[in-house]
Image (cartoon, rainbow, N blue to C red; front, side, top):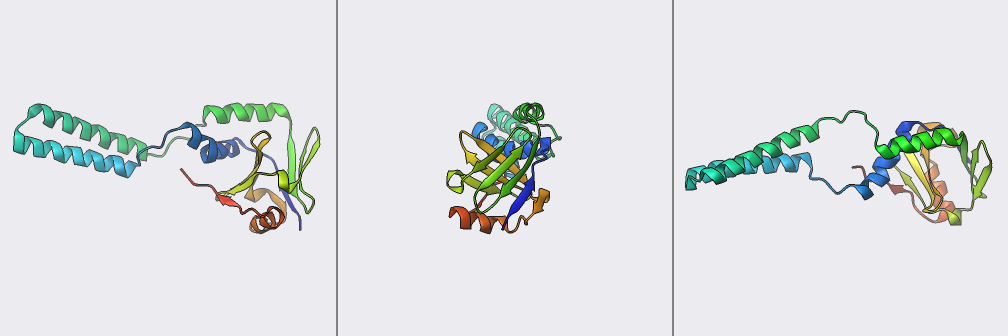
Length: 182
């Protein structure tokens, strides 16, 4: 069996890679919008309770202000982000455009072939680190030194995206790993 995937990247492919892997390493975990809203309601209620029980103006005002800030922040965080690309994504997109065209990635019994405008590269399956998957892409990780390729599921010209995980496992002994969405 053989799989052939066209490598006609878009800037969205770089953004998907950044969100799936690099962002998790560079940004701290965030509190969810539901948790933030819940804390906001808690501090508003605590402020009212403080006023009712202790009549402490300072504590009441501080708790209400904190509650309002958390509620406003949760509403802002819940709004869909505009389609703005990360700095890393924009830089990699420029490098990709300047480097020359990639043509395709081909999985065969002998290994993985990457064809581009400059040369052809063949990688043995033993040298490949991992294959990750999300809803619309696979991410072929060669090694930390060699990088990764984004393989869009809608770019298969031979073979099917559904068949690639079983083929990958039969050739490498490794399972395809799911990308955890942020």
